Amino acid sequence: MPYEGGEVAAHFAQWGLHTFVLHYRVMPHRHPEPLLDAFRAIRLIRHRATEWNILPDKIAIGGFSAGGHVAASAGTLWN
Image 1 (cartoon, rainbow, N blue to C red):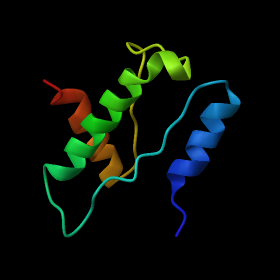
Image 2: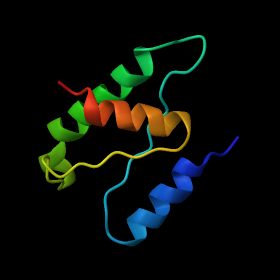
Image 3: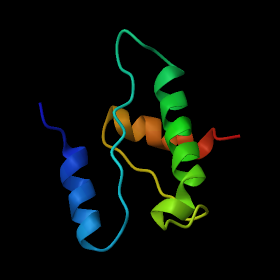
Image 4: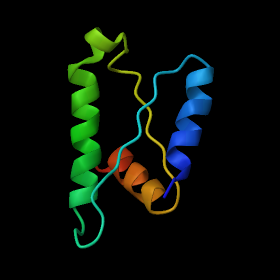
């Protein structure tokens, strides 16, 4: 089943931005697993930033519905 992540990522990529789509864990997994998936994705992107020509301190995260909750949590609970 297609979700909006791929379409949104493709749209941002047309603007010249690097984009990634995270398929995080869902049921039967519960908090904090989806949040840990987001943290791991950010760490991976930062780790490979030079290879992928990405500025490691200029990473944004977004999402819709439950994904928006994961994104907002990652942005506020990162420490």
